[in-house]
Length: 419
Picture 1 (cartoon, helix red, strand yellow):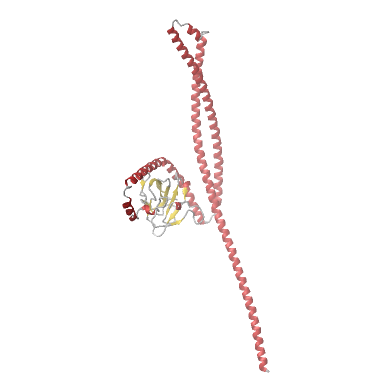
Picture 2 (tube, rainbow, N blue to C red):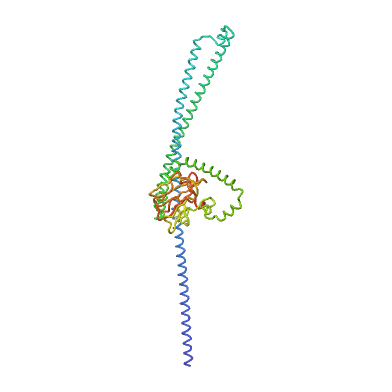
């Protein structure tokens, strides 16, 4: 009996313990599930905050870029208006001189006509017919007829020229007034654009203040590049005619040489083909479809058309271990437009105009390493300087740009499309 009671007690205790364990396990599972859900919620919240921060960052950078574009547009418009105003002032000055000249000539015509009228008045009633009838012979008649014809023609020409001069005076005065009106409009437009420019610059300063430290540093670099490029653009414009004339000359020379080579090599295709198969070490073997080779051999692009922040870089950077001092090569044949050594932005840089109408810029070269000069012809693969870290640079690298004609800062295009 006691044994049976003991067994019942043991079974009862086991059932109670099992029930309590199940309750504990259920509570633990529920707690873990709740913790997991809470963690997942926190992750989702954090991801949402991250996306929001990234969105705000991108928006701030985008806003600054939009203002940069507006500032550039205003500056370009002001430059165009300045040129227009200068041209209009010159036209007005020329027109005023022309009006004075025409009025003087018209007055001279009026004076001649007045003298003719006085002569005709002093002659009284004597007419051309009376003059002819007074001829004493046929020869005298013909002579007087010729004189009468010349006088009549002279009077007629004098009247016509006087009318034309008066018409020209009116036209020049109309043109002058039109130019003056256009000048006033251009000056008014310039003032309006100048106000827009100042407003955009002020707004940009406010937006830049909201950027992160890294973004501000990049923006300062971009601003300095733009300032330096104004001077560079002026240099390019100064030598543009010379460069274009030389480029045209080189194109014609290349065309003649190409035609000559085709004619001289037409009979030996088999041997040449076998030779060309063995020749794989030339610079052209690694050139792109645009005919460009890489400006630094053995190194890849580490910064592309855009910075990591999303701001426009407008170039590509080549960098990597041991790149300092490596040769910088001309990507194609061309003519050196300009070289310089700046203490900011580009540092030591070179711009080359190529025969395909493109321009390339190589920046941050090692101090004292520039090996070419303005106006010099260069060949594809020729060393022009060495990789360095001059100007606004955080370490040795090559900043490389491609520009379309006429080679200005605003003409930059993505170099990856040409390499």
